[in-house]
Length: 300
Length: 300
Image (cartoon, rainbow over all chains, first blue to last red; front, side):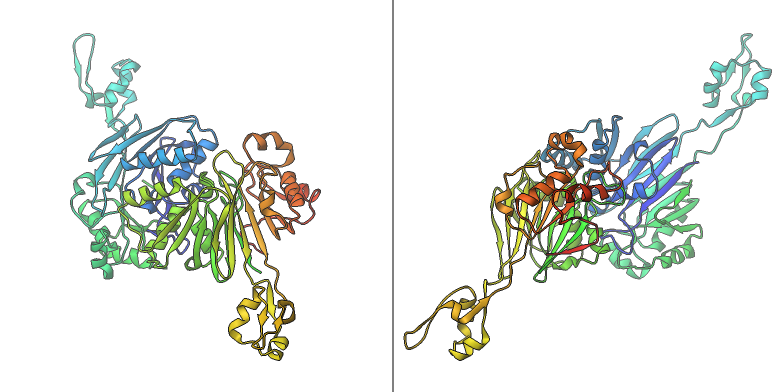
């Protein structure tokens, strides 16, 4: 189980006390940041996200409402003398921009900023506890979605059986990952004899910003929690399409097609002062829908 | 008379509910923005500054806490389809940065952004109502202060006398600016015979960030309201000098030497949770001192 804290749920111009896009995923003691709109470093403080625990930042695309807060956060980390490396996954041009910003302020970061340019679907991160995959979505400019999945071993040790067959502890990790065991006297003990089904690997897909499209469905199939942008209501379907955005109903259709467990809506247009209608519209198609609310942590 | 609204009074890392530097000067129906730290566009909303009235933005230097909010504000103005030109006065490298940011998001501004690179002391703006001058201050990188002064005519019409001598209205403006008047029959009426002393031209000097130095005193002499940074208290004098900042006492000494009417302190270091001590320290040297408080408008 892990958590997704919403730091901003508005699109483009901040309005109605809603902030531009940013989300903090807390997993295995680390914080992964998904997008970083202006003011994210303040929202992090407001909602008690541990800045020092941020290990990786993922930027979906280079529209300002998804990254204008990045340079401020990076600079503040420098001012408080962060020493641990920071990984940044983003479209390639962001590297040049950060370098320019550091150079014109005559600044050198006291920590290592490791830049990973995005280019297409791939696995970006594999740790003992989680994986992050990236996949293309369809927006006006180069844009990506991210899938975060726990990386628990698929099986867990059956303590009774491993005692009974006197399996050495050193072999447990192999068993958890599915290996069989050969005894000294040559007998094969199959994995199923020594292990039980492991924990479900919870998964979260983050899709912002994107046109309504089936093109990335294969990457998010059966995800436990799906965040899909819903900039508009269905009344504005043409406008949504024109601007490479989606409506709440369309987000729900994607959740339905992906057999997602749950849907979170966000990236609401500033033209909507109240956003309850987004939830109602989406629930007609996909009942397990919630509005992403700033400051709230959704468990996956 | 005009107003200075404090949008941010903190230095470097935002903390204790204090924001990075930005001030809105409301003069003659226009808003002039002095610096634009991250989140300025939100602070503008919070404190009811009219975004559409912003005609000119002045950036003192390219440390992030003084300009990271600029691109967000410029972009939001584009998203709400601003049409009127915007003047930007800043160190030259900012132009390249803005161009790069617009280009990587594939954006074109719908309004004209007129960039004026700063290079030394000069008069930047002269309108019928106010003037803005720039002067160098001393910081780790190229950095400027700004002086805003009302530009009322020095004399006002004496209606009794102008009626008595039958002076045509068309000549009034010349009289306000000090001209004498020659009657049709060749008699000279001196300016003093036709006018009264005009309004005082109120002035505001903004000095951030700077080392304690006399070098820019000539530019701010007799200013009505002086904002001088005070990042530290006097206990941290060495640290202030090392980082090209000032203490509250030093700010007060500058106010005293400049014969300023009033002093505003700001740019408080995040290490200070409470800032009342800054006021007390400065008042020992210069009694007419106040803390700049976010959301408060100081009249000049």
